[in-house]
Length: 170
Image (cartoon, helix red, strand yellow):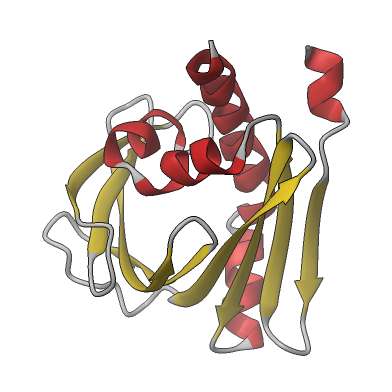
């Protein structure tokens, strides 16, 4: 099983001319299950943070005009809050978000970059691929996020999703 994971597609592409990150990731699961893992609070809370962080949702309403207010929590209990606004939700094909850092009350941190995300779900044989295109306002914002460890964080986070999918398929 470990070997199969390593054969799953993973691309992390940086486009500095357009201030975008494109992350393409294949999962050993059908598209509906992967969609559920990205859009249901009880599943997101089990995987949406790099190891060894955990995730906790304060509030979530996955729909056009809805939001997700959550924290990633490190081993010492420090909370790092995020706020995602959902729009252009098209089940089980794609959704778009505006993603920002915030505090526990949901107040957006203007010092850190916000981004537009488009998350697209496709079939790839019996598997599913998720293509995430993240667009930043400036090259500086893009480089800030890369320097904060976005690539390593995504790799670790998506490995947690692999593990969750394995348990859900049983």
